[in-house]
Image (cartoon, rainbow, N blue to C red; front, side, top):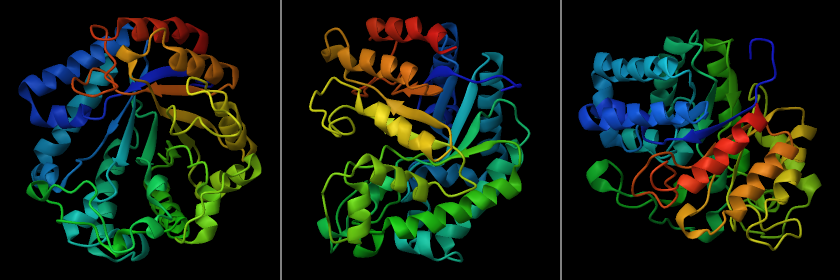
Length: 354
């Protein structure tokens, strides 16, 4: 950034934009969260730059109000010297639900209604802020890769993020399953659209760390194979799922879900993060830790958080973001009042990362 290597610690606040959109006390809470983050040396906030359910998108019809809320959010971040990572499509069901289509329609049919919704939203968002210095980089999805190659587990449909009162269908169908090999060309084509609109900012995938068996699941083409991937297979998966012009590799890292691999069976150890970071670095693209965290109030001494911080520092991961800043009700709520020990520990590492 400005000719110098950029390294920082930051936070996730999933509902930052949604609170600005609602206004009143909701917006005041979001503004307070930004002030607190800045005061504690946390320099970046990642947030959902879009609604989660179709109901959230009803305001989109009033474009002055909708984008006015985003304008206010960005100006507020600039006042606090914060950089922003907006996720363009957090819930991959959102645009298919708005269009009355399935996820396969969304991913594999470029002229589907759901894809047209995505293209329109991307054009409006990216064109509006392509010259905005507060945007650190664009993030495409949130953990889309974790939904791939699971048809063997739910061949006839399932219930997932279903809230009919908020605009979703009653159930997901078989055609809401998809494979990695359907996801990759979708992501490549969408990234190309973003790059045409904005030559100034990097583009990140928004993926979680691949499942321990991600490449085996991919090769099984929906029939299932939970054999753990080797580091070489992990590298292949990361390379193939981050085609140009996707330039930044995204990892999310939680204990039990992401760290019990490569021989590690210690729940509080972040040692496998070294292997994940090395695999990303081998494909020649920067990597960032888009999410990590713990049940801070139940983890005496915070051993997993300490291990993540030290391992990320030693592995030269330039950006680490913690879940989920000043979000009452979230199991992983991270805030000065509720989890002071965790906040102080993160603060103690902020200068080390700089």
